[in-house]
Length: 84
Image (tube, rainbow, N blue to C red; front, side):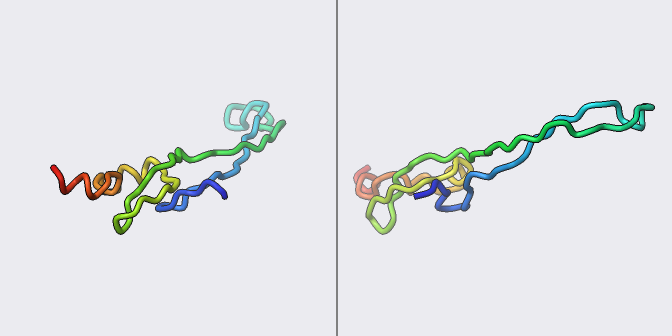
């Protein structure tokens, strides 16, 4: 199963990096030439967390951004909350 955030839908993206060589025309050069292109993967900060839904635990992938925005009581067993 792919690693995708259950809340935000964030997943691994692929991007390209490029190397350029030369001097820009603005500074009196002949222009900047592209000499190398490489693919890279940008991975989100995903954590495996147990979330309590309707009194039952569920293990899901969550991005840290989603965890910060969620209610902290979702990560604690509801029966433990009622005791204290």
